[in-house]
Length: 231
Length: 231
View 1 (tube, rainbow over the protein chains, first blue to last red):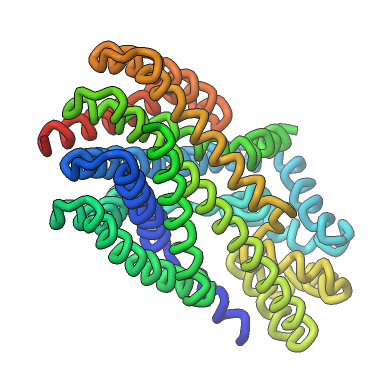
View 2: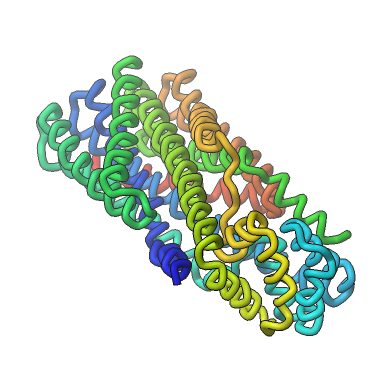
């Protein structure tokens, strides 16, 4: 069964993994780039550490709460569309039956060819609602409790990512030396993260690693140039 | 036709709007929170402006390139799954026909009831491939050129959002006064943005406004406390 394996691959890269990837992609990149950028303008490691941890707090909360609101919005949207479909199937079943036929017409089927499915759904209103949610609106039922789990996962991954580049400035007080250590450990972390992320999303590991290193490098170079240009 | 209107509502909140929302949500929040946080620890407005613009550069590039890679990944994933479905429908059509019947069995339909659709799809291999992409895998064909458009839209929205809180520190050199101005203009911008975003995503405007103001406020307060605690 060749098709089962690619459905399963979608499954493996589930929602928790997706949230870790979202949080860690930015967490490894933005605090790193900010700290590297500030070394182009500021010689005091204490200010760089202060700015870096402020950014980690702000970024983790902005992304975490943003993820929470997005997930809750999705859940509310699903619930309101579900209530709407249920009402429509109860009150205007002939309109909904026409919509089912139109879905199949989009794939070149005549009314006669789709009639078996239409008639069968009309005999099962609950399955009909599920069918419309998925095939008319393209909506999946969200997992319960998803919003908070998503928020905490994204925020924790952002903090974990941001600690990597910042740790160098905490441990080494000479700013140029701290920058070199920060660049070294963060590029390794970005490469490892990009490789694992690539494997989970079907991108070859080496290419995934090069992509995340490239994004981190470009962001850090831009932050460095902006900071130096302003000073 | 009650159902057409909610399909259209999905349409209005299209991909460009979604990208502006992604970029501006974080762009209005993180540079604001970082700058506000640093005023808890640093009295030099020049350092706050330097850190703020470095963050805007890093955040815009990280989010923009992140959006680019995500969109390109989606496009490549779609293309590879499309090639796979085309090959499977050519080489193992009986397996794919069984999968179509299984999709309908998930909605309580018997083999006889779905037979009309199965037979019709078997006569139209191209429509059959499209049907499997949408209904088996839940994948939509991505718009061509989407990846770069998405990257530039997200990055520009992030920069535009970040300019709002930072402008106060550029215009006013007294840090406490700049902080007050920054908080005032950013809270207004967050409320307006949240209200418009709410209307586009089906959330009442007032609630949308309160949500974005809350996220921005919590992120700024956390950054402020962290910066003060470290100093």
